[in-house]
Image (cartoon, rainbow, N blue to C red; front, top):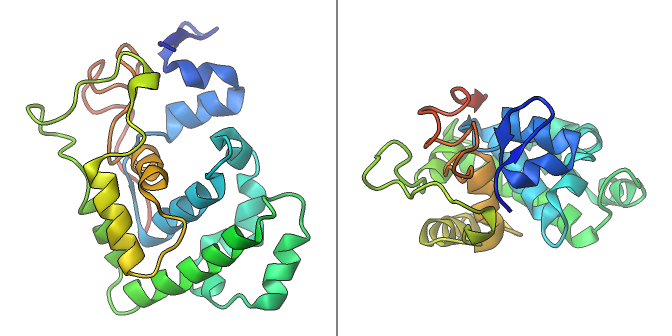
Length: 211
């Protein structure tokens, strides 16, 4: 898989050519630095739901996930009980995996404890493990082929360990590396893609998200 030229004449990572929503996600979100406790909590939860599935499966269900999980507001999800879990298990618009639903509620409680006395603590924890994006001497070269991108890295393994220490679940090193890619801690856009740092310094914009 290498870069693909879309109908608009723009070169993108090959995986983004498979679906219009993938293309939008690639252009607007994937690899763009994301900050804020709530946005990163949402990413952690959705990457956990993605485990064993394709990301497009989650992406197309994201509106329903946001609706049913109350926009992933940490304090609200942390209050979910068994009745809420049963309600979620009965809604076919999301992935009805009890272990993942229960982990999302548990992760909300872990996040609430982490950020309870320190607004921005989850953001700080996640970004502590970001490789040096702007250090051109240490930044890995843009991949020529996305199939050569690692499934996990020392940084994702370390972040996985840190999150587990704080009580998070479904945050293995591979899941966490996917989080690091999507939240812009690393830049894995293929060489020649318009979003790649090797193509245009700074990518497609600044940080997004909120706290």
